[in-house]
Image (cartoon, rainbow, N blue to C red; front, side, top):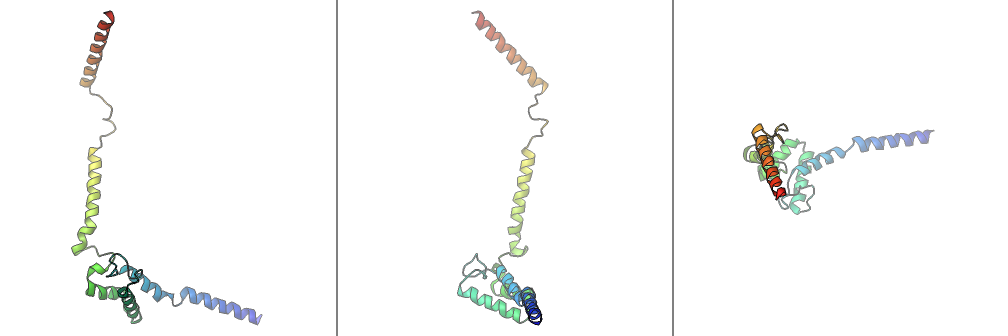
Length: 152
């Protein structure tokens, strides 16, 4: 029972190490790397890019995490050097505010156009009394013409 108990304890420690262990800084680094754009690749995060610049930036992220800096401090470090462009999701403000507002404005205009151009269901297919009289007169005139042609 002593050997079995030792194995169970070792497995418990191994599982606890995997679940709660050293993976957190790596996860944090990866999350930060996903937020930063590669200056060489333009539309790819530094986590996905294999360029030398992205490798150096990933190393800088890891170094700053090990130094105990917060996520905001690390992001600020890169935005000071590259500007807001380095962020894959730029903040909603300043120069990027139109990027966030234009799609909302287009959607609002589309909704207004759809609502104003759509006729209510009550008006569709309903004729006014004047229109009904004109239709009745036209039908009567056509019948009279048809009757005269039949007599000939």
